[in-house]
Image 1 (spheres, helix red, strand yellow):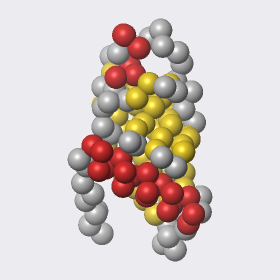
Image 2: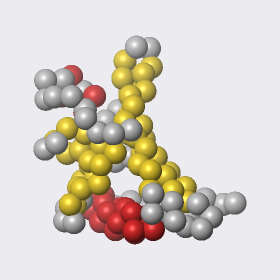
Image 3: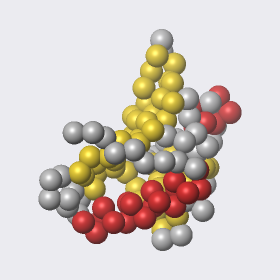
Length: 115
């Protein structure tokens, strides 16, 4: 099963909004994940440890990004935004395999943006 973690060993149950961009030649890109009111920001999670990154885990292993930021509203953390930079066609293919598994496990659909 594919899952996303912010603290190793604790799955995030909130499904993110994910925006993908890709270079014209298809070799690089970015994946921006936005989690609104994620489990990891609840008071029950405060003593579980620090957020050390975003871990995309599946049967092939894990993809890691350290670019993780909390978004605050009225001084309270309300969302997490994380960016994964895709640096090569091989990384792009690996990321898309993870996304296919994660999408299937969470009943997500893909919508292509209009130009």
